[in-house]
Length: 63
Image (cartoon, rainbow, N blue to C red; front, side):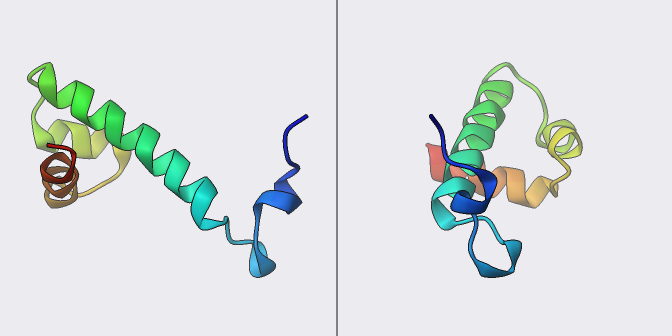
């Protein structure tokens, strides 16, 4: 069975780097997929509550 929320978090209620990393990787892959479909960085940023600059950074990192 999977870990409980308490097991996945550090003191202070912050998620561990592994949990955050997995979530960010999944988000980054969705961002890359949307970009490859021709959707503008501004539109992607709005969907993920990010700045368009951050979306461009993610796309640069993924290529």
